[in-house]
Image 1 (cartoon, rainbow, N blue to C red):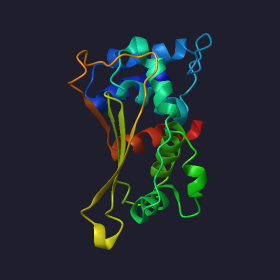
Image 2 (image 1 turned 90 degrees about the vertical axis):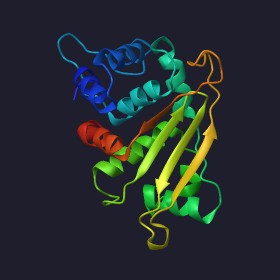
Image 3 (image 1 turned 120 degrees about the vertical axis):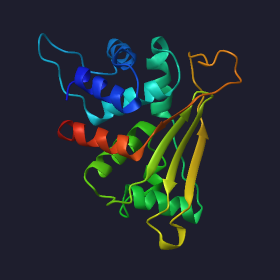
Image 4 (image 1 turned 30 degrees about the vertical axis):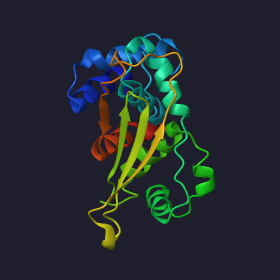
Length: 199
């Protein structure tokens, strides 16, 4: 799926106007974060490019600052911590054979690319309830519904971290009113499905 089609479909899923998404994509392409069309051939988006566009939009920053905000979010490292539940959530989400030490070194962009791919392949079965939330006050949160553990079926585990946005201003303007953007499990799975052939 090329960028134009992806942006239109993403806009529908986010209940936004297509142009609101397309302008973010254009900014990322101009900044070198996405391959540009050559002549009439528009390359299909890779999973990583699609996730980066999602992060740019979810950052809450204006499209003119999208490349800075997306870059900051993409590099952010979400450390699971040493607790039993965070470790279990990461193992379930990223695979029992995953090396948690290596995972904790991976930036958010890599983790979300892995997550979208695993969700699309049904590697998590039906219990793929992982949410991403980004608040433009610089908070990133991964939420895991623990419904795959019989004793914790109603519990949600949240891993949070603060991101320092460089070269980007808070979109709220006053520093007090922050907006949270959420990527649902269905959205993350869809991204994995429509970009599966492109890596």
